[in-house]
Each structure stands twice: as C-alpha cells, then as structure tokens.
Image 1 (cartoon, rainbow, N blue to C red):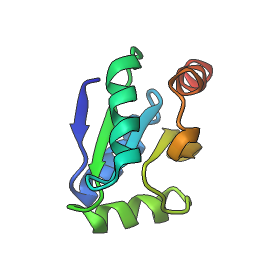
Image 2: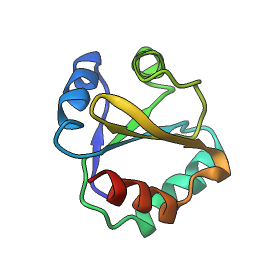
Image 3: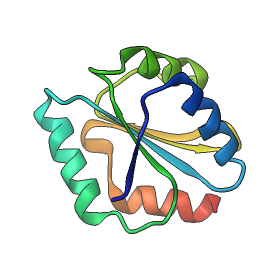
Length: 111
C-alpha cells in the first residue's frame, strides 16, 4: 500500500478534485485501537489497486477527521474506509466490515 498522509484541510479539497479523475480511498486509523491496526495490516498486505490512497491518523489530526466526516456526509467511525468519486463518498465501511475484495470491486466499478 502506498499511503499518502492526510494531515491538512487543503488536502481534502485536493481529494475532491482527484476523485473526478479516479476513485480515491481514505483510511481513517486510530493508532490506539487494535482493530484499526489489524485492518491497516490487512490493507497493507492485500491491496493491489492503483488509486490514490490516503491515511488519516485521526488521533493526531482530529480536525481533519471531522472535516472528512462533514464534507463527505459520513458518521465518524474508526477504523473506517471511504471511497470518494466525483467529490462524494460512494462507499464507506468500518471495523470488520472493511474487506479488501469489496473495496477492489467498488473501485473497479467506479474507475
């Protein structure tokens, strides 16, 4: 997984623009949660799709996490993945509902 760190509000607008070109994945990660760590490891090991993929440390960048939740109209959860396409969240999942095959399928459909 080639993570891009999401750490500023300006990047959220960049994601909106990028999502008009291809789907964008955002992974909201809690560094103190064992479930979040397990999901991140699964993504790192199984992900093979070439789309921009952002990693958000929500403990460190809480205001950015809140902005993401508000901008894309999703309820805050952790861990959580969002797929953004054309400036909108077209898919989100949290905890053990985060499955790499399902994410791949969603990205292929939207590419």
